[in-house]
Every structure is written in structure tokens, then in C-alpha cells.
Amino acid sequence: MKTMQDNGYFIASPQHDQLVVDKAHFCTWNLPNGLEFLEVGMLVHLKDEFWKGLKEYQLDPRLDFKVHIPFYEDDSSCGDLFCSLKEPDNARFVFNDQITHTDFISDGGKIPQGVLFSFREGGKFCLLPLVLESDYSNPNTVVAKVEFPRKGEDCLRIGNRIYCRFFVVSKGKAIPWERGGIAKTTICYDIKINEPRNAPTKFPLDQLVAIRSCYCIHVVPSSFESSLQDRVAFKSIRTLEPDGYSDYTKGIHGIQAAINPGDCLVVFNKLKNTENPKLPFSFFTLFTKERIGPSQLALAIGANIICGILSAWSWIAALVFLVLAIAGIWIWHRNRTKISSISSRG
Image 1: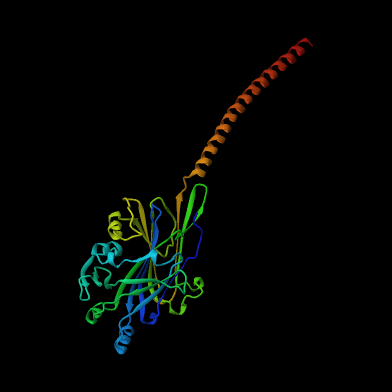
Image 2: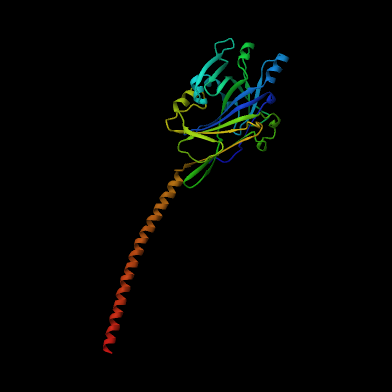
């Protein structure tokens, strides 16, 4: 049974005053084979101050994020998704948008160090890789360092909108919590983002990034039934494309898994803080699933036995009632006959 745990997620950066996150993506995966992991993606808008400071002091571009994830343990449980997302088909699968143009930044080599994507509806941004490390001063916190192209002209090509994405596998700890019942189990996803009341002791709350919009996406087995959705945040629900997932995770140790058509549902939630991007986000979703196990089988067998006993006793009771009724009518008729005989003699 998965118990309730810390549900606070945080994104901070030493350069928080030089950027704003246009879109934050929190995508939870709960696959039928038991694999659970979280993807965190950020579409970052770099302000003019970011580039101005670099030019004045002739510094190389650097951008660091601290992301607190309750179940994060160490860097062996996480991985960058740049190598997968740089493939246009995988980018289309993740962003659910048609790609109109792709331009690779090689930084003087043959291996892409960045990808300029143009989408039909999502505009343009540059996908960049990450270096992931554990923050040993803050438990359950991963440091995500953005890798910029080293050549000056390539660095300028990335523009003011960059995107990065990574995953964290849940090792033994569950992302949702469960509450068992006799016939059904309730699964609760309660995710709070940049909510100061839930902050760890040493986390730098003064460096929390501003987030304009946040997507919270849950991928769950199709055996789950949606029992409660936030009417404000809920957008849509659909089935997962198994081929798309297979190509997206191909070769990625820790999250690659076989999925059949119809195995999983994808639930989309979205909230905006356009007027005040400093505000926190909260997503609450409930699912239920049927429980079929030894305890349920034992209860079913016991119920059948009891019903059988009660059914047998009901037949016996009916038979006794019928016998007593017949005996009562016979006694009544006999007494009536005696009374009639006495009256006629008198």
C-alpha cells in the first residue's frame, strides 16, 4: 500500500531574476508493469538582463536550476531527455504539435548541441541538453545545469526561448498515494509546485522562479477510473500512443518499457498565473481501480457460503411455516367440528 508523502515540488535558480518559465511540465508515469517516474520540462524565457550581463563581463552563459522532487534519491535515478527529444518525431509526440522547421546546432562538431524547433502552434524555441547532479546540501534536490553551445555565434542563435527536460525514476517510493477499500483502491495525485508552506528547511525560497503556466499530465493504466478532476485545471483525457512512447524511450535506461494499445490513459491538466507568475500551483486528481486479490476472493467465498446457508435456512423455515400452518388449520377445523357436534346435542 502506498502511503501519503511529501507533495511539494520546487524550482529555483540563482538567475531567477533574469528569466521566467513560460511553461513548466510535470508529467507523471504510472505504467501497468509497475514502473513509475516523473518528467520535468521547462520552457524558459531569457530576459535581456541575462545576455546583457554576459556581454558586459565577457562571461560564458550559465544557467542552473535546483528542482526539489520528494522521491528523488541520487543522480543514478535521473537522466536528461535531450538525446530523445532532438528527434523531430519524439518532439511531436511529447509536445503534441506539428513541427514546421528543425535546425541543428552542432557547435563545430558532428553531434548536435542544440535544436531549433519551430512548431505550428507553439512558436519557436531551442532545445538544450542538461547536466544533472545531486544537491547534497538539500535532500531530494537535483541540480540541472543547462549546457549552452561554446561557440559565440551558435550561442546567439539559440535566442531567448530555451527548453530542457529530464526524468526521475521513483525507486520504491510512489508518486501518488493510495487508500485501500474492500472492492476498490483510491489513487490520489496531489502535486503542489512552488508552495512555500511545503518547502524543505534549506531550500532557497528567495530564488524561486516565476512560472506563467504549468501543465500537470498523468499517464495511468486504463484500469484506473477518473473519480475526481479539478474543473479549473482539467483539459482533456485520451489514450496513450504505444508506438510513440516506445520510440521516445528507446535506449533510455530506467524508463523504457513495452506498452500495448489501450494500456494507458493520458490526463491533461493546465493552470495559468499570467498576472502573477510568482504564485504557486496546485493539482489534485483522484482515480479508483478495482481490487482483485486474495482478500477480495476470501470475502467473496465467505459471502457465497453465508448466502448459501441463509438460502438453505430460508427453505427450512418456509417448510416449517407451511407444516405449522397446515397443522393449525387442521386443529382449528377439528375443534370447530367438536363444537358443532356439542351444540346439536344440546
